[in-house]
Image (cartoon, rainbow, N blue to C red; front, side, top):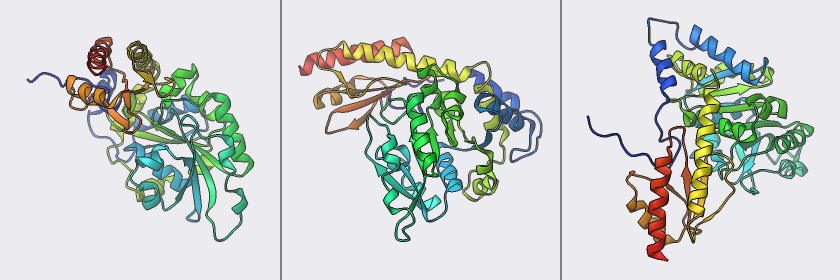
Length: 352
C-alpha cells in the first residue's frame, strides 16, 4: 500500500473521516432496512438533532451543502421573492448560480463587514415592498462561521433575526461550519440558532469529520410542511438514507461535533500564532473559527506552494492582496503546523 497523501490546509473538505463516524457507517451496513429515511437510523438521528436544536426542530438529510442551501431557500420562498446575503456568501460566490437556476430566486447582495451581514442590510430593499416591478425579500441568509473565518456573536445573530422578523423575513443560516462557530462562542447548537431567533439552518457535517451529508433543520416546523416534496424534486432525497443519518447520530453523540470543532479551532489559533511570528506575515482577518487568512508577498506564495508536500497545500483567496486561506481540520496536527511554519519562515527569509 502506498503512503498516505500528505495533509494540507487548502480546505477542511480535504480531511478524512473521523473513526467514530466510519464505525457508525459500518454498523449501519448490516442487513436490509427501509429506504428513503423510513428506518431506525434516520429516526435516531432526527431525535438527536432535536436534542441539540430543540424539540420543535424538523431535520431532513441531504447530500451536500449546496443542496442544503438550495432546498432550504426554495422551501422558504415564492418565485417572486428573494434572499438577502452578503457579497462574499458561499451561496452568492461558490455555488455556481445554483440558487438562481434551481430555486429560481434572486440573491440581493449587501456589502460585508468582516464577512458579516449587519441588521441594516436587512431593510435595504424595503422601499420596494409591494412594488410589482421588484422582487420581494423573504429570507436573509447569514453564513456561520463566515467565509472570512469570522463568527457572528449571539447578540449579532439576535439583532439580525429581530430586524428580519420585524419585516416578516425569515432568517436562514448557512451552517457548513456551524460547529466551529458554536465552539468558538462556547455555546450550544441551540443557543446559536433556535434561541437566537433563527428559522432554518443548513447544518454541516462534511467539514467536521463526516464522510458526506448535511441536514436542513427547520426550527419552525410549519415552514417544513412541503419540504418532503421539495427535497425529492430537487434531487436531494437519498435512497440509502441510513448512511447519512448514522453519521449525524455519531457526530451528535458524546459531543463528537464539539471535540472535532474544538481541535480544528485550536489548531487554527496555533497556526495563526506560528505564522504571525514570522516577519512580513500579517493576518487579513481575525481568527475566530478554523480558518486563517494571511497576507504574503506574491513571490512567497509561489515558493511556499512548491515547498510543501500536499498537492494543493493552501488556497489563494485574493491574488491582488496576496491573501492565502489556511483551513484546519479535525485531523490537523501540531506537526502539520510546524512544517508549514518552518517552510514559510524559510521562504520569507529568501524573499525578504
